[in-house]
Image (cartoon, rainbow, N blue to C red; front, side, top):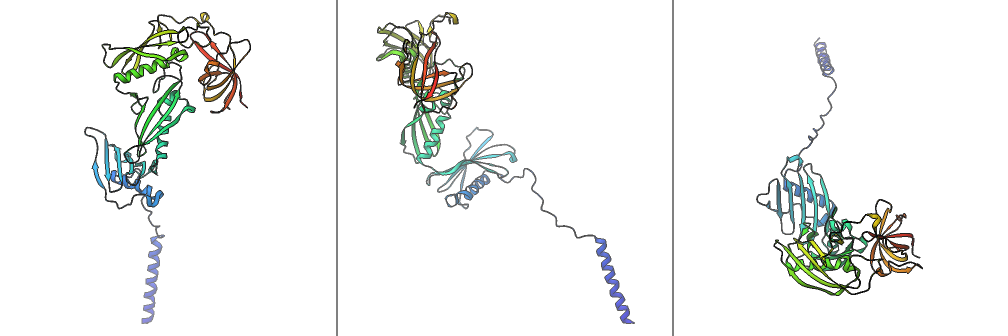
Length: 445
């Protein structure tokens, strides 16, 4: 009897247990980890931005990268009075890290990081976002003269003066100097542009004359720290340097030398400064130059019938704040406008056309520019040879060895810089507007 009661009790317990399990339902799945909320701060300050950048470099550069356990000394180098931006510097025995960032909402902060080793010669730049994303703007690389030269070359190519009308085929490095500071070099580049002036000259009245430039670029740890063109134009600030009288005089003399009248037939040995005047204007000078030319007349007289007589000229050049503001020759020729003073532009039908001319030239292609209008291409060429066409004047014979711009209605999109071509070239226009036309353009055999 006791056995039956015990058996009955066991069965009852089992049934109760099964009932409890069935009522409880299926076993719940494990709770997944809560995803980080959108905009979560992974990088909260400059120190964490520094470490994120170093971790990025370590993953790619290995043993050359800084160690993770460096003891950094922190300093706040934010200039006094500068609002809205912070500049924090970290230094160690071999490395320096600068972190700059705007003072904005933390999740929108983007940190600009520059890592440098003045001793070991490494440099890296990039940006770190608050979510931990690292974007490299300059790779982790050894500072060498070749890398520094590349930085300087890119700087010149991207400068507004060169972008506006620099002739790419003329750009070359002419000098490299090792400076006294570690990992510092100075590079000298020379190039030609199609007009006078500096910077972006859109909308300005410009003399169409090939102008030579000399740019001196100083690079310190792969960063351009100084850039001066022609001793007078600051390529970093895009403005004229403060002028001394001597610098202004050199500027005025160069202006005379590059003027179409002097370029055409001026006798260089005859050019002299005869007087300096001082207008009642701050940072202004007037320079009086005299020179002789081989023919009568003014401006570019290519194609004109000219009297071959030595002709004296006097040019008064006013330089104010680094710019030529007035330029008058013989009290009658406006060197800025390239016309007689007080002369109204003649109506087109009254223009005196260029004398009938033609020539067959051999030339090297310097640059090509796609434009609009009747002549969709302009080509800058360096004339190597010029052959006469029987019965016609030759307007290019005197330009052998020089660069000119020609217009053409032919499709020259397949031409490449540096190629040698032959073409029929003639001068067209009148005494105010003259230009060269090129036809029958072919690659030289």
